[in-house]
Length: 235
Image 1 (tube, rainbow, N blue to C red):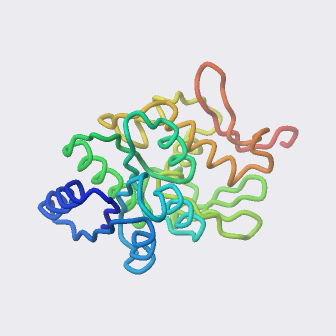
Image 2: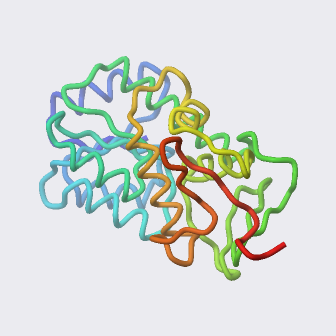
């Protein structure tokens, strides 16, 4: 695990408590060092502060996702910096925790993110029974938890895949944001409907021909979202 945090007291406190939970922890004090370590050690999870010297956390997150690295990343941001949270989720963060944070809450978020990552590696996550699902130019290999579009691999995070499978598993049925959030993140996770909206936007950007006019991942006004497997006008 990698913690990228420039406040020594927070970084050391996190290291002590995470190591007491049995995790191997590496520390980086600025964004450049964090990016270097992330590429070198390929940690199972990154706890990433937004306000960092040399390179901020959002830039680090952007670069890692652009390189196709899908390890869970939990961003830390000031409670008042709502736009940092939104930007982080849109860039592919798995989760965010507001500063000042409860250590118990952060540890719970870490465990949840690692569980989702482990499920992705093991090919779990409650998918529908069909091994492969195709729509448009997209093909999902459910068992391998991989997605291809026009033959090219689409890089998605474990949580993005779980959100997609949540919708696909109930194809044709509208799910509320609360339904999706509860199924993917669990009942004890504290989040907002905006969290689900951000992941839907990311999936549309990666899978829809026109994300502004989605064909498959539909918005159901006043309810939430619905996945339509069959394209309009096709049998």
